[in-house]
Length: 593
Image (cartoon, rainbow, N blue to C red; front, side, top):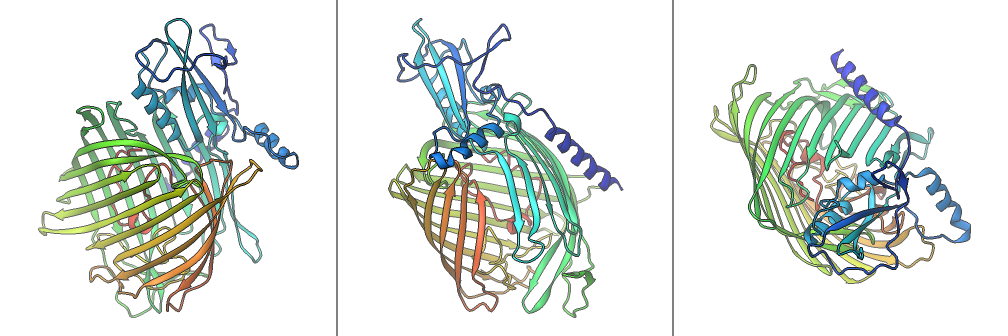
């Protein structure tokens, strides 16, 4: 009953937030007398090359809607409709991300960092901060931003009746407040319908803080999370902190070759509070801090079969793996080392949009020791490392990220729950409208405390054309290559492109991972249709047509629709790898944009 009440409370909170007034004070400057006046354009004023310590006499914020340029006559209705239904980002929201204030000295590093922080926000397409002479010995700053298309409308359709199986609906910039609010539903067929709410605020508490609330009922379980975080956006800030808690109950399925997939239900509770502070000069610094974490995990011993008709008991003669429960409270030391600079590029992870890539090296470390508190009786050490390194510029760029964690059982005197994964990628842009991306991804798990498998069927980490594969492994290596071409268009409604791609991957067995086997190489080749709406948006819409190249009997020609923004971080770990990791490692804190 308590779980249902918590779920209902989370739903109510998100619904109340979604009912907030939809209004916008974008493109308005609030003066001291409280009156809202349109910003005065700097046209005709003398632009200044950069900040050089001049006093800032005024800061003007100009927010633009997704479509700023007129469209062809037959499509102008699209622009008018978007402008009527879209609320521009509010003036005060943009100001929260600025590192400069009126009356302070204009600093070129602060100006560039403020511009980059604005570009890192998912609700904006681009941001520019220009400096103009105020003709009185100082300067005025003109901050101009352009919003991304904010409406969320993602139906789940199928070829047979009923045509619509699900829906995700909401707004990613509700009322121009930098708030994502969405609800989703999907038909569960023989199980519970999937119902969920999401609420994310990227400028929480009138600062550069983030608030996230999600509550979802799955077909066979639930997932509830709450998080407050102040990410480490820039070397100029002194502190970063995080507080989170949540709980999940979900079945983890095992692929077993020709046998039907069975599942074990995993229940998890987790909480985390921590902070870091900066030590050292800007551009070459260290972060030191501490956190207190709690994690409870237990896996059912009863194996289930999740069939189309519902849940039934597993009556096969194959032995069911067992997993030890975990109940631990840890005190953790946090350390970060960073020597990074940012380079603005175009057309890397987005079709034509701008993004800031990190060049240099950074390392995040977590080292924890369990403490005996009430029912938390586990005795262990926990270590985790997040390494990033990159070299290059606007034409050629090479990046590497690797994430590893492990747990040392002090009673058994042995390591377990070892999980590692990473990505190595090369971006090459020989011409303005061409981009080549060559990458490899690897993942591995060993001696796991929770159900864990890797497969080529995973949507993020696998190989297309093999989503029905019945084979699983403990280690996975995948290579991908893609050649993109942007097609010129005069419509001004979207950027359009095409791509050709090839993928290859394989699995390796590990005795400690149930039902894992070693497979030969599997591959796929195909073409893609790409789009970015509005033009220069960093969200990439794509339709992939993949032809599998392998001897897997479950291979199928695949058509995949996707929409994702990969420009904020170098790499997002596949879900099947995340399922094996500790929930309390402060990944949000060390995801340094």
